[in-house]
Image (cartoon, rainbow, N blue to C red; front, side, top):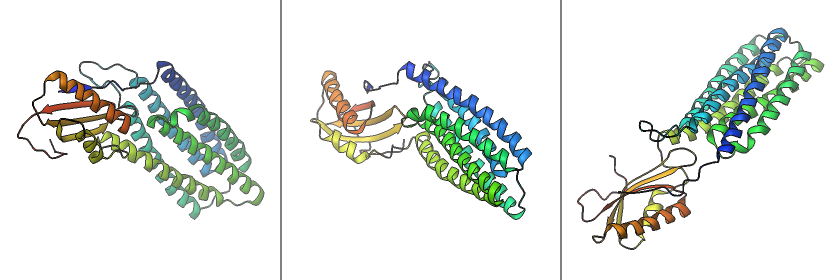
Length: 307
């Protein structure tokens, strides 16, 4: 069985350490905001401020999960953990996106109750705390924006922080409307808008992290296309028993049985394996390959077979 993974480009350690440090700073900032907003929300009676605090608290938890996952993903593989902790960040993304949706549902329920029983709110405090939230979350968002583009775990942390910043902007607008126009219904209305945005963002991330955890073929890859690319290589007769999955954001694995049209020797197989490897890496971004060579074997020649 030929196995190859020469195209696995991992991030440098410096980058990972920096990612961890940036996450640590955002955790500290978010704990400060959460405490301030909980106290302020209780004193002022603002639901949107309390909902923002609840969201911030879920952020603290999600950022801690992301931080732990980042640290774990650096751990080396061992005899009983042959992949190491490479999936830790995907699990973090899954957990974070789930909590995002749960928090949002709780907020909607609270806001509907507040519509039915409106409450007068101390708007000055709401305005100042919203400004604090915008400043701290804005800084956090800038810190981890770069990593969010290439890493699902960091994207989940980024989404939590970005929605927080937007929520604080909404709370600020609400505070100003309550202060100058006494429009207290704005508070629960904003809460519902924040919550709907959370559900929309969370669902998308939940879907993509679930795909990876379920070992589904990445959306960008077409199995039939990969099979026909390999089949065009000289001496390859048939490609079957294909499995394609994503281990984490850096690694895409392909496993297949290849039927050859003649009884080739090992050195020839190695040369063909190198050609296959180059083809699937440059055309499809697959960087781990596990090929079982066959000649005249009477097994199923279906492309995909349930093991």
